[in-house]
Each structure stands twice: as structure tokens, then as C-alpha cells.
Length: 399
Image 1 (tube, rainbow, N blue to C red):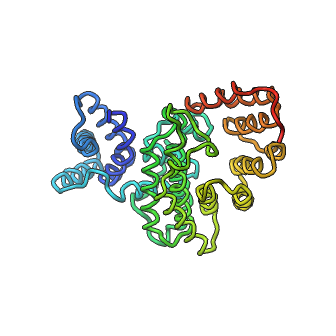
Image 2: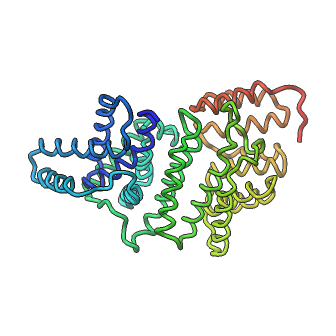
């Protein structure tokens, strides 16, 4: 493991721990960044516990900074930190710190788009350009959202804690969104390696923590099931040379059967509660994909119809079109995409390209592939799309 790997694995944990100690997200993030800068200068080899080293160094940096401040609040914070330094502190992966920080960032006083951007920055350690690509917006827009969210937390004195039981329902939807987006960024990164196992693992860990905190919430169980069933397929997602492998071409013997069994059990628990929600339906789709030697596409399409009724988004419509193609053919799927509008999202033209290719409309397919390639920021996905484009040949049989 190198320093970059330590940063990806430990950044969110360290910020969460320092936020608990300092009660100030801005100061915590700055102190952790300073600590990593110091690590670049001082580390010849990795210390036995890199996360503990970063937290200790960051806490010392925060004390030094507070000593230079002259306000009464700064002196009080300095005294509190010095007192905490004399007490034993758990500075590794503290069990609930990250979940607490997510709940803080998902306070209803914050704008929804700012909540997820801030949390992905703090918990996932994602840089502004990565978050901007995930949201398909300008980097300056994301930066402004994060600054405004931090200012709101500070000015409104939003506490760093898991909310009381009666506050949980208002906080739950954005918390689920954050964990979902964190996992997605790990499973299909916008840049760098296609898969970031550290982000996937952290999202699953936090989903388990949330399920333990709120075991009677079907959507919490649904999200956990969805993440587990998706993670179960990860070992087969890349080929021996690191190339992307589509679901239909994956070697199912490589899938993680223990995660599949756990995910299926959670889906059954959700079904018994009979309170379907978007995450539960997506988990049910994942269960169909991982049940048996082949996917039951008519059942998947029926579930997507149900999901589209509950969450009528363009992304759901896009995914539903893939199922339509498997059940009714590419022509009907292409028609289903006519009104789908996802500017800047490479998977829309990529899907159109696949459907056009199946119809033998190779010229249009090449143009769609070119559009998808231009929009793709991940090199693994770009290489996959280039390969698909070069494989276009005449004649093709319509289906």
C-alpha cells in the first residue's frame, strides 16, 4: 500500500474522527489535509497504523492552529483538545464516526444537492472534479455547494451526532442516497481504476451500520441487499487483462455466493414487509440477475416497470430500456429511449449504440459510440467502447 492508497482508504475515517474531537468540519478537514502533507514529507515507509498516525498528527496540527487564535471560542476548543489528548482515544476506524458525519451532512437544513456533494467529499475523499463528473455539472458548481453546506453547518451550529429517533425519518432518504452514490462511485469510478474496492467496502460497512441502527426500515435493508448483490458480481466484472465484461458475458462461477445468499435473504425480508420502495425493487432486480444460470428478463422488465412508477427518472428509464431489448428486441428498446434526456451521461449514447448495432444500423451506431467515448472519463470504459466500435461489421441480423 502506498500513500495514495492510504489517502483513499483513511481520509474519510480520519475526517470523521477529527470532526468528533473538534466539533468543526472545516477545521477537521484542514487538519487532516495538513497531516497528509506532513506524511508526504516524513514517511519513508508506512507506519504500522497509518490512520492512527494521521489522526494524531492532525489533532496536533489543530491544537497548534487554535493556539494561534485569540478568540475565546478557540481557547475553549484548544483546552478541550488538550484534555482529550490526555485520555485514551480510539484513533483507528471508529465504529460510528462516519455514520455520525453522514447524518450531520444530511441535516434537512442543507440543500439536497449540497448534502451528497459534501458527504462524498468528506467520507469518500473524492475530489471536486470527481464529484462534478458524477453529477454531470461544472466543478465550480460542486465547489460552491460544498462551501455553502459547510457554512450552513457552522452558522446554524448543526451538531455532530446521530439524530434522535424521531428525527431519523427526515434524515434517512439523503443518507441512503449518499451511501448509494458512494458505492456507485466505487463500482464504476469516474476516473482512475474502474473499481475502487475501498469505496465499495466502506459503503457496505456503513449500510450494515445503518441497518443495525434502523432494522425495521425496509429501504435500509433494500439498499444493503442491493449493494451486496452488486458487490457479489464484482469478481467477474473485469477480464484477465483488466477489460470490462458485460453482465451477460460474465463467468457466474466467479460470483460471491455468500454475498448472494445474504442479499437474497434480505430481499425476502423486504418482501414479507410489503412496503416496496426504490431500493428494495432495485435489490429485487439484483436478486433476479443472481438467481440461477441465466437472467429472467421478463421478470426484470416487470420490476423496472414497477420501479419507473415509483421513481420516474431518466436513469431508470435508460436501465428499463436494456430490459426491453432483451424481452421485446432492440427496435422497441430504441423507441423507449426517444424521450430519455441525460445530457453528458455516456451510458445513454452507449446504450443507443448497442441497440443500433443489433439492428444492423452500423453507421448510426458508430456515431453513437463516438459520442459515448467523448463523454466517458474512465479509461477502462473508454477502451471497452472503442473495442465495441471497431467490432461493427456488415451484415448484422435484425432481431
